[in-house]
Amino acid sequence: MQLVLLLPVVKVSWEDWEDRNELFREYGNLFCPRIRTDTQDLDPYLLPGPSNKVPVVQHAHHVHPLTPLITYSNEHFSPGTPPSHLSPEILDPKTGIPRTPHPSELSPYYPLSPGAVGSIAHPLSWFMQQQGQPMYSIPPGGFRHPYPALAMNASMSSLVSSRFSPHMVTPPPHSLHQTGIPHPAIVSPAIKQEPSGDNISPSMHAKSPVPSKKEEDKKPHIKKPLNAFMLYMKEMRAKVVAECTLKESAAINQILGRRWHSLSREEQAKYYELARKERQLHSQLYPGWSARDNYGKRKKRKRENKPDSKPEDFSIRSKKQCVQYLPSEKMCDSPASSHGSMLDSPATPSAALASPAAPAPTHSEQAQPLSLTTKPEGRMHHHFSVPGKASGSASSSSSSSSSSSSSSSQPSIAIPVGTLGSQSSTPILTRPIPFTSLHPSMLSPPSPFHQAALHSHHSLFQSQPLSLVTKPTE
DNA sequence: TAACCTTTGAAGGGA
DNA sequence: TCCCTTCAAAGGTTA
Picture 1 (cartoon, rainbow, N blue to C red):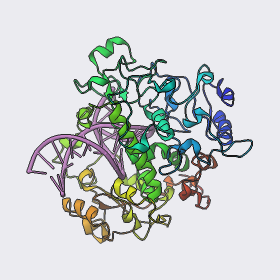
Picture 2: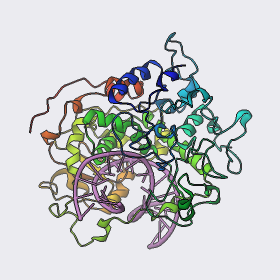
Picture 3: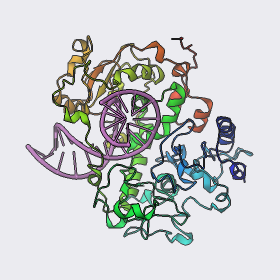
Picture 4: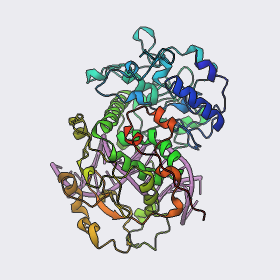
C-alpha cells in the first residue's frame, strides 16, 4: 500500500529525494531512493546523487524500470543472523513491532514502476514461480547449494533479487526475463568494450536485450561477481559522496578502502559472506563461466606499455596523482587506527569469517596529519618521489616484491600510522591535506538519512561527533 | 571516446 | 605454494 505513494514518481528531483527519504525511514527502507524511468543517468546502486552509469546490465534501451535501483540493502547483511526479513530491525511503522516485511522490502531499492507495484508478489517470484517452479531455467542441479545455509532462503532471495535478479537469472531461451529485464551480469559488449568471442558458456547464450542485429555479432559479457569490498563500495559510495562532496571515484575509493579497514571483523564478515553468496549464485547461474573469460575485455593500460618511464618520477606523470585524493580522504574518512590495528584485519575473507565474533577493534582514532597508506606492491601503479618519502617510515618496506608476502604472512609487523592493507602493502607517503579539498561534511558523520538507511550496523560512523568546518574560499 | 585513477578481493596462470 | 595479472564498480580526469 505504501508503494502506491511512489508509483507516480517518474523522475525524482532532489526535493523528491528528500521526501522519499522520509518515506524510506518511515517504511523501513522500502523505497528506492532513486527512481527514474528514463534510461540514462541511472545508478541503481547509488542512493542520492547523480550518476551516469548504467546498472550492471548496460542496456540502456531496454533497462527494465526495476533494474536501475537494484542494490543491496542492509538487510542483506546478516550472516549468522536470522533471515533478513526476520530482522527485528524491520519494524512496523505503526506498531513498532517486528514484522515480516513486505516482499518488496527484501529488495528495498527496487524501483517500483507504476505498473509493477500491484503485481509484485515476492522478490523471487521472477525467479521461481509458485510452488518452487523456476521461472527461468536453472543450471543443472537447480539451486542446490553446497552450503545448506544458502539454500535460497530469505537472505539468498535478497541477494538474488538484489543483483542477480530479476534480470539476472535469466538464461535459457534468452537472457530476458518475462518482463524484458536483462540480466545484470550480462553486459552487452557493445557497451562493455570490444566483443569477445567465445567466452560465454552454453548456459549464457542469452539473448541480448539490445536489438537483434547486435546480439548476433556480440555476445553478452558476464561480469565477475562482486567481492566483499566491491559490495561494500556499492553500498557506501553514495554515503561517502554525500559526506565528502567528492565525485572522483578514485578519491572515493580511497576513502572507502580505509573505511573498509576500519570496519570490524563482524562488519566485514557480512560483506564477505554476501560476496560468497554472490559467487556461489554466480557460479550456479553460469556454471561454465570463468573469470578468465573476461580477460582481455579491457584494453591494456597504457602504463603497462611505458616501461621506460620512471614510475617514481612524479613530475612525469600527467595523470592525476592519487595523493591528491588521500588527503581529503583522511579528513572525510574514519581514520585508520593509530595503533596499527588495521593489521589485525583479516587478511583474507576466510580469516574474517573464521572469527566473526572476535573482538572488533575500534578504528576510529585520528590519523596522523601525514599518513601512510599502502598499496599492494603487485598492483602498485605509482611510485612517488615525494620529498621525504624515501626517508622515514615509508622506507621500511620500500623494497618491492618481497614485502608482498611478508606483510600478509606477518601481519603483526608494525607499520606507521595510517598504513593499511590486509594484503601485501607498501606504505606510501601522502601529501598534507589541501585545505581547499576540505568540506564540512568531511568531518561529519553520515547524514541522518544514511544512518537510517544503514541502520545501526554501521555504528562506526554513528559514533562520530558532528563537527563543522567551513570551507575556505579559494 | 576510451583509458586512467583508486580501492580490495577473487580467480587464474605461470614459475 | 607463491607471485603476478586481470577484472569487478564508479565517475571525474586525461590523452
